[in-house]
Length: 292
Length: 339
Image 1 (cartoon, rainbow over the protein chains, first blue to last red):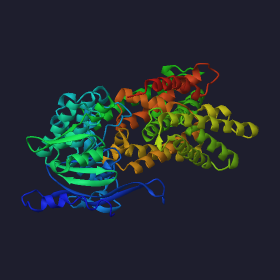
Image 2 (tube, chains in turn purple, yellow):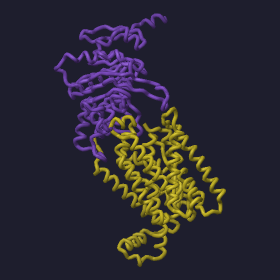
Image 3 (cartoon, chains in turn green, blue):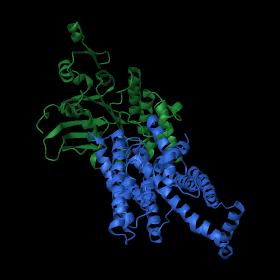
């Protein structure tokens, strides 16, 4: 895997000096993957060697345009995919080698919502998060109910607990899905484009909540998004992917370079540094002006 | 939040069993020869206290030799088909899945007929061939029902319906060319019928197969709940999706194969009963599986009683009754497309 190997020195360099930092929780080390359409055919998509580390209470944003390898990286981190080379370790265990139940006790994955086959109540849905902790037939215990209720409270959705899933709004649904992930009591929270169908208010609300949760529950939060502004505002670290290569790893200020982002996202952008040292991304109105 | 408890499940099952008991009593009473409630109670009581000798030969014939075996057969078949339907619905992520609609029943019927023609002297061959027919059909429908690698709801249903009509044509072909052979009436396999009692040689295999099939599906009930909310989500919640799907696939095919081997292709029970149970008790598979067993038994007992009585002394095949009730429900569900 020679491609992309020169790019990700930022992660190793940034953490070398500090000794007070909490220990590494997630270690993605030179992990790569290749999809094959058929057995021996050339791969249709490859994700080049990617490396970064994440600690507790940290929010890492995986950023990149469509088809940049974000979902593949999610698959590798969640353990659903086994890396072609390199390794993905969660507290020292390779995620792809954990059995599904153990994995689900440590990693909660939130995808864009998928349609339900049959109507379900929000409370039942959140209780499903207790599945990896339960016994064979899995009747919910009192403890399970308390945990589920707390999860609902933590996402500010206690009032929604006896509603039908198909009757609540997109933003509310996203909170319920997040509550189910919290009910798993994981140490790593992995969110795959959770803001996709949300309006801007709900997006900010979700990210603020995640920030709070990461702090209170000591989660490590990995969030996949192509919302540049959200990543800039909320992430402690950014992993920038482009066409299956990991281009940069670092703080938003380190990664948000105008030329780089313009090249990756193929849009005229402007990057400014805000008062708190976080970058701000704006769209330059050039195209619009030219077309008029 | 009111999570499911064992207590609640037990209450639900007990009340359904009470309904089933009432349906059975009614089914014993009604028929071409009506029996008064007093006579029925007296005769049942005599059997219960072991005084069989006091039974009049008429009642013995009608109640215990004709009606009761047929009711028991109907209950077993109804339970098997309902659970199999509930299983297919989760497996294929399609609320309209049913062994009959998907062509699985026709596949099982074809298997059974071929076995009857090729080796009629071996009784176990018929249910085995019906099982193979069911598994092969669902595999074929599964692959025909995919579009660009994804299981497509509409394509799947169409694939099932086309497969069913193709297999039914094969059945008719075999029936016609082989007329004169000792085969049970065509309506038996095409419409489903309970008038032929369960051969003694099949009783054990049928009972054990039923318990194993239902038990295996029930053991995955908690996992199926998650699979119906999405396979990827289920995987991330610790469900071994591939294993669960394999268990449900084999068990549901087994249940369909067994039911068809003894009663032909009774349609829509596997669609109707799980949906009624969902409406009454929610979509939780831990409740749905046991309630479908009992609900399926109730449905068939009622349907068969109607089939025996509406145009008495002539009998309708029970499948005609279930289709008359089930087809409109299918259309309703298709148009409503559950959320």
